[in-house]
Amino acid sequence: MPDLAEVWAEVLPDIRKGVTGVGVWAALNAVRPVTVEEGTLILGLPQSECELAGHLRLAQTRRLIESEVGRLMEQPITLRVIDGVTTADWETEKRRDEERRRLQDQALARARAQIQSTSSWEGVYEQLSRKFAETSNRSLPQNRARFFIEAVDIVARALQDTPITDEMAERNYARCLERISQYSEIPSTLVAVKVLERSFEG
Image (cartoon, rainbow, N blue to C red; front, side):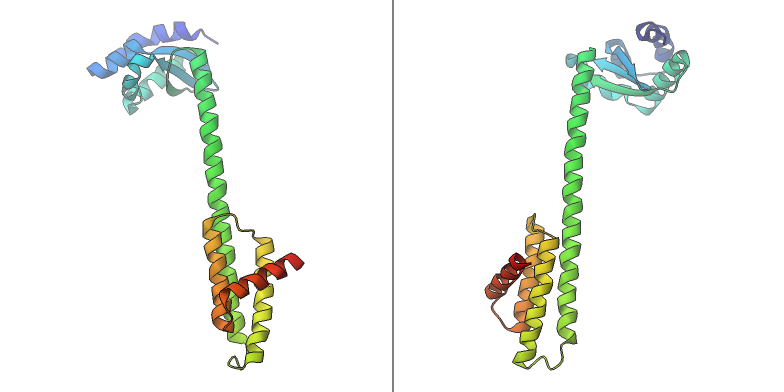
């Protein structure tokens, strides 16, 4: 692979000819080639000049740099501008990338779990409504009692399958308890006790 410093020194005059603006020129004068890694050209700016990075990320400037460097290196090149001008600075930036990815993955996993939990408890809520609608002679206490026992089983199973892990799930679970309470005319706290007892049994 051609030496990056030599490549940069050779293409820099042509890049300068292809751009205009004091800011872009200042950025090109300040930037230093750091490395090429997996087709990515890493250019670094000293900490004191990092505000110039935006000029190098302009579409026209970026394309010109990628084209000129790629031509001499005989491979497609993607530009990345970092703060710092050493390989150690690039290693630091990669560690930051990894940490950002890790946090994004965690946030995505939490969001997925929340969506799954919400959809699961919404399904339970609708199932309770259907179960009560299917109960004949709902005004009779013995039939409401039968609904209550079946509803407690439904929610207890759901609690085992979908543990409560966040506030949204907690609220949706509570809605199901309130629905049983409303339909069976039994206090919601007692409903919650019976569900917990049933879930522990299962």
